[in-house]
Amino acid sequence: MGKVMESDKNIVKTSLTQRNVVITTFLIVLIITPFIMKKAFVTHVFITALLYGALGASFDFAAGYLGIVNFGYAAFMGVGAYTSAILAIRFGVNPWLGLLLGGIIAGILGFITGILTLRLYGLFVACFTWFLGMAFMFLIAVTPEITRGYLGLNVPPLPNFWILDFSDPLRLSYYSVILPLSLSILLFLYYLGNKTKIGLAFKALRGSELLAMASGVNPLKYRVLNFALTCFFAGVLGAFYAHYIKILTPSLLATGKTIEILTIAYIGGRGSLWGSIPAAFLIISFLEFLRPLEAYRFIIYGIILILVMIFYPGGLARLIARKELF
Image 1 (cartoon, rainbow, N blue to C red):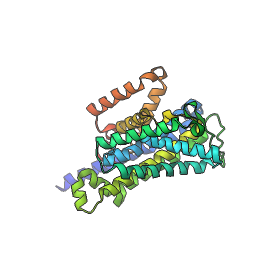
Image 2 (cartoon, rainbow, N blue to C red; image 1 turned 135 degrees about the vertical axis):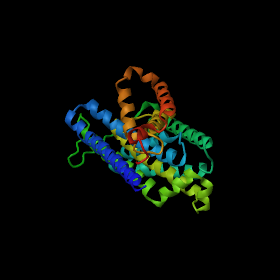
Image 3 (cartoon, rainbow, N blue to C red; image 1 turned 90 degrees about the vertical axis):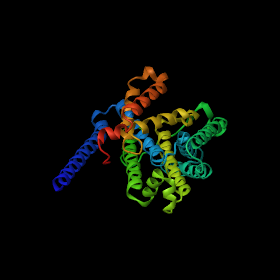
Image 4 (cartoon, rainbow, N blue to C red; image 1 turned 30 degrees about the vertical axis):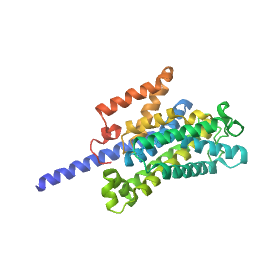
């Protein structure tokens, strides 16, 4: 019996060591590749992948932990983007502050939406958030005097800060922002979901809501908290996106953008959070190199999702980890 337990411990230690090696190697590649290659295209792919990876992790924090599928998720990203852009253009607010304010406005809207919708479950929540996202997109489209509608809103870049020069054509300064931002969001969500009492409440609700309620967990309270938090991060990342791309149209809030994020989250592995980062690199790189097939991207997303759900429902996280040690 003792030998079996010792063997199990050795297996766990080996797996943890392998995990740490994989994570360390991946982080080193993330940090040095754009600065070594110094190609605008490569940097753009890395920036986009990290942005969508963080969005996927945030989406997964609601869908994977509590089963809340927010089909209006891109709308909250758009709210953050337009908030920061309009504040910078109309009121001269520093875009660095706009990143935070965009997240706060999106989070407040998420909180209100959560209170109104999260007494419902499953398909009802998905439908309501989808309708809400469409409403936000319509509102932006019909207020061109503020948002310029489909003509597009020209957004100023992030202002230079310390050694960061955002006029650099290689975009390395933007990468120097999105890398720590996306990893910080990922680490915060992982810590909150796995190392705190709030995370325990989320897991209890995911396991059995009735048992969680019997233990004193208020389902609505924690569902709304989760929803508002993910909307906040969507807003922050949307604001960064606005100042990076430098032009906004209502299409940013479309359901198609949510489907892209959902695809990355599911390929990464539901409930894993970190799996969204490698999934985003795979998907974004794949689509960038297949630009001629851009019109068929949603068909491609559908095929990939079906294949993952059939042959490897645990996603990349399970594929890399092999065992549920992450």
